[in-house]
Image 1 (cartoon, rainbow, N blue to C red):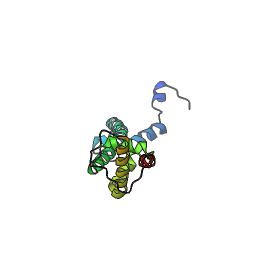
Image 2 (image 1 turned 30 degrees about the horizontal axis):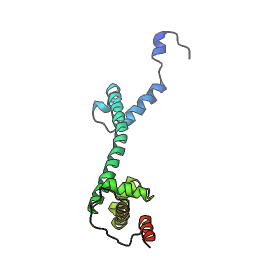
Image 3 (image 1 turned 45 degrees about the vertical axis):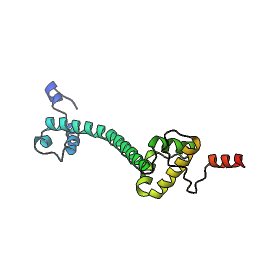
Length: 155
């Protein structure tokens, strides 16, 4: 294209500008009033909405982590264990489950979670954790390595 003057060059934006604006207007299709129809207003609102969406994705992850931790803490409290003792005892037993899986077990599989708390409790008793709520030594058919070593050495 040959432009004979600078004003014709400036006005010849053509199809590229149309599609660029169209992309923004599509993002603002659900807005009302000038926020939807006037490009200068639309571009500000769309950019602000995209910033909020970006921040929201990070906040959603943080909220879910907090929810999982709260659920596991509540389930541990039901079984007379602290969250830290539960996590440490499971780690010592080489049971590697993250908070998401533990919270799913606590909500949907309470008996499975109860067995995990029993294992953690036995491990905490065997290792002598100070934060254990002393309910007496309960043995619900759970055998850990520590129990086996103590029985072998006493025999």
